[in-house]
Image (tube, rainbow, N blue to C red; front, side):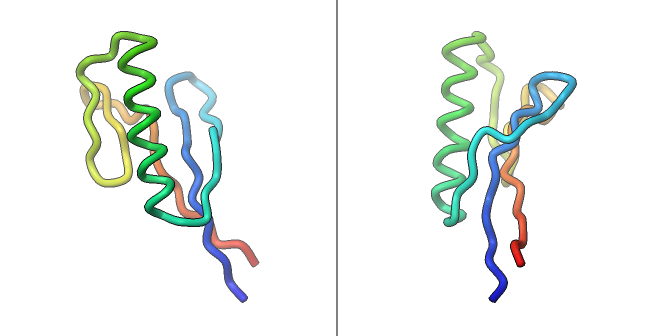
Length: 71
């Protein structure tokens, strides 16, 4: 049976990494919004916005939800 998981990718540095993984897409999107809120508070990034499955700062993607198929 094919299983799908969703990972939250942090792309704020030169080396992207995954913060967490979720079984449900809606949970991953909630976590994406939380990451955006944390970045606003911690780093003063007030110009953040979500478009689809990505969080942008100006024109740069800094967080995203990535979909993976597990076998």
